[in-house]
Image (cartoon, rainbow, N blue to C red; front, side, top):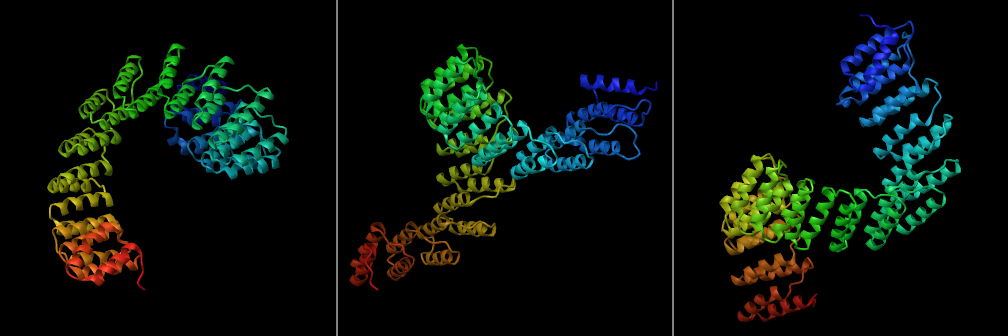
Length: 573
């Protein structure tokens, strides 16, 4: 059945309001509206189609279609409806939602070129997009220059958008300059204006100025909202003034405003950070008694504070209470409690909690698993840690460099270098490039096992991989040569350090001097001491004692005097 213009328009209106318009339907109706002539369709129907298309699921993927339809609508041969200000608003807003303010500027250019009367609502979405991309200076230029030039006076939304952008960037003084321009232009601020400025001041730590602005807001008859009070409460908590924050909460309630969960969470967090855990728990109980439902953030904040105080049993009890009240813990909640249990060496409880988390369908994450892996390794059970690492991979979680390094460190401390190499190879196979800490741990394990040549190969591999060995890596190798290798190779390592611009520290030189003293290599000792003097490293009594004992035993009193003078800081230039 052929449908007339008014029937098509009614169909668009009905499907638009019901939200049942598909992309296929929209394209078909658009084609039919485009050629309708008697009577010509209203631009309202086209705008409804554009609105539907730009708000559909996965609308980010439809931008080429949307822009093509707009181009068809604006073709010179089309005698149908012309794009209105509303059309451009829809398309500019869409460009901002898909994070394409550049395209929004293009549509703005088309709008201005079309000679239509500019209104603030055509600019406001664009201002929001520019601010979201930290292009604040462009947004300011539009408000102060482009809009007035086109005969368009920015409204309170225009100013609020840019003021908020400036405050979020920490440009509070510039925000107040713009605020003054806003007032001088006769634009009355609203609660949103003051909320942005108060938030900016609070983030700067200028809490007294924030309260002065709050008082000014009240004097002008602007009623604060929940956001205003929550922002000030957050600012007070960051300053550690939880007592005043509690007073403000009470005042807010007395003024007839009910705090939301964000307000309560802000204060709970502030109390926990101040060490006022008892008050935080009381706040939680107060929330419940007043009919406010604590969320996962509320519970997790208090669980974290309890764990930091070592009160893991109370934290476990709170977790059970949370679940019984219908609030589901998330991975952060479990991770927090697991970390607390691991720090108290309650590994079996931590592992049980991990299994509970998985059984609830919460996916294992890297942080949670790494916490238990590290705890097992510190307890001397790297084999169990390695098993957990592979279980983690089997369940779809991705270990990171820290996870692998924890297992490598665990095996390193036990001298299990074969197991260490196995984990190292697995790590590299999965595309993780070890850092100097991982290499250092492996080199230390190999050196303790007398595998000096293997440790040297690792150092070479480290360099080839683009990682510059630090002084700790070289010291590990030097100690390895001192204990198991050729003592003469130690000087070669020192030379290599110098060549690679790595300055040996006192600890490194002390290790070398002790090794030479033990092997009675006096000439090498004096050579190292000369090098230390040149580099401005003064030996301490720990380094000097075995050397002096050896020199006096061998009757080299002049050399002993040189060592004593160098240790005390005297010069013999």
